[in-house]
Each structure stands twice: as C-alpha cells, then as structure tokens.
Image 1 (cartoon, rainbow, N blue to C red):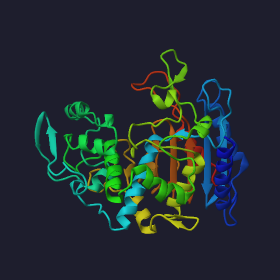
Image 2 (cartoon, rainbow, N blue to C red):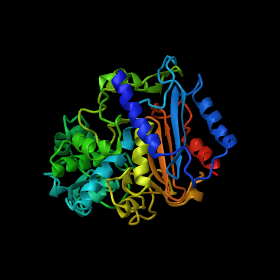
Image 3 (cartoon, helix red, strand yellow):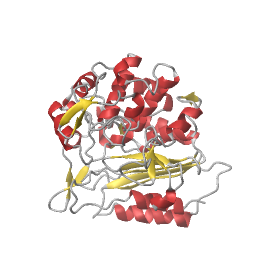
Length: 414
C-alpha cells in the first residue's frame, strides 16, 4: 500500500509541477466567489446528499484549486481525498477517440474508411425499418462511429424493434472486443448512416476493436503505452490493482426507501473489478481527477503535455468542432444548443443553453455522475467527480448538480 501511495504522490507532484498554482500571467480568482462553490459542494455532499466528490478548476495551465468534499464510503466514515478513484464510464469515450485519432494522424486509418475495411461482416449493413429489413444507403464509416451517426439502435422513437433485435444478439455479453465486433456485425441499424445523431455505446466499442486490429495490440495495452504512460496517468485503467482498491469510491443509487444504497453490478460489490468482460472503449475506465486533468490539459494545449505530443494541434481543433453539420438542426438528441465533435459535445449556442459558458466549449460526462469541460476561449478546465447512478424512470433521487457546478465555476472567473 505504501508503494502505491508513494507512486501516486510522485505522479501528483509531477502534475503540480507542470501546473503552477498561479501562472505569472493568470488573473487571480476571488476567494469570496470560490467560497460560493465550496458552500454549494458542502451542501451537495452533506448527510442527505451525495457521499462525496472531488472538484478541480484549472486556467491558463495553472491549478486554481482541487478540493475534496464529503466521504467515499456509504458509511460516511472515510473522508474523500483528491486521489480517490472513480468509475468514469462514458468519459472513457474521449480517451478512445484520441486513440483512434492518433492512428489517423499516422496514416493507418482514415475517418471516411468503412468499418468493413478493418472488421469482417460489416460490408452489407441492413436497416430494420418499420419491421422490414432493407439495405442501408451506404456502409458505416469510422467517422459515423466516432460521432454517433452510424444509425445503431439508440433508444430513440422508432428504434423499438431494432433495440429488441440487438438485445437478442447481446453484444454486451461478449467475452472480448473481437467477440463484441462479431456480434455487432449481426446487428441491424435503426436508421441510415449519417442521417441522425443517436448516442450509443456500441459505436465506441467498435472503435476500440479497430484500434486493436490496426495497432496489433490489445486495447488496454495501446492506451497504457500510447496515452496513460506518456501523460503520467498512473491511476487510470480498466481494473484497479489490489494495493489501490482502498481508494475506490463506493458507487450508489437511490433505493425505493429513499436512502442511498450500493448500486448493482460487480464493480459496486467489489470496487476495482473490471466494469465489463472486455476492455470497454465506451465506458470501462477507472480514473482520478488528477489523471483526467492531465488528459484534459493535453487536449486544451493542442495535443501535447510536458513535451509528449499525442496529437497535432489541428487534429485537436477538429475534434472540438461540431461534426453534425449534415443534420438539420445540427445538434444532439440531448440539447438544442449542443452539437457533437469527436469524443465530446460542443456548445454551439451558449445563450440558448441557458448556462454560463462559451461557444466552442467541449466535454462530456459519465453515467455515475462524473463531468468535465474544456473551454478553449477561457483556457479553462473544470471537473466534478461524484459516484452515483441516477434512478431510471425518475422518482425520488439526488438532485443533478453539474449545471450549478459549472455556473458557480464561471461566476467565479476573474
């Protein structure tokens, strides 16, 4: 345990060394305005709220603050710490997208390449249209997968038959990414490629498999060698080593009795266990605020950190642009003010969104209440890590706090 703690402290020292508390040219944030954020988080993690959380704010490559609140166990006995380990679920998608874009820059794949060039069985996609199968208008491309425009079932209106057919194939029951791709080759589309945005996890699992095929490495090995090790992300992985599991945060959901309980699933009962049978590019990673902040800073700074260049500046700029211009309107299913880039959403109308921020702001979230945003205009990164799965279908639950968190960060800016 002592070795693991020392390793983390060394990584954190590197992180702090790379990010001065206040850069020489960075305006200072007013303590009284940051105090509003602290008071809000204290309330959100009190005895009636989330178990605990960690926040990080960074501007102009300097840490404004990183702060832990509440506890990391259901018994509320172990204080939350800034090195606590969280299941980040769909924030994994941004990492997977970076992996694929690295291969694009190396000329090993092209965004417009059909999936069938790398994975067998995808050359004649079918659309399940009102109960009738018909050939799709074209093949699915890697760009379609990255931008959630492939047409796979996504729970949208009219997807019901395609969703049921996909459930019979059960791709998420796969033993590895090869098996996942094989099962997905038998899944019908719910719409023609490029005709709609439908957020789904299967697309990024297929991207992860393409990374394996093209690189000749397991997806986990590629991420470790090409992203995590260069960036010093020492606590990010698909499962947590035994000597670090004491830092994994309990994951909760709201019980029918109105009290928090441990959520379902192996990683909830055994914190640190893998979230999937396979290396899930859509939602399988554990991470810390410190690790993910290094990843986010790499993107904010144009693809490089501490002399290690993962991507070129223009590639990152393209990732952070809206790629839904072929749609009318060019927005996601979640917001009329947000489009989608490669790996995350993109704010295209901050005023319409009704939340403090900037046009061009980029980021995403995870199913268990983890959030990050990168604002190139303000050279800002803001992150909120909690560990709670909201109840499906509504009902009594903890209030969503990300919107208020981001508003409080932006109101405190100098």
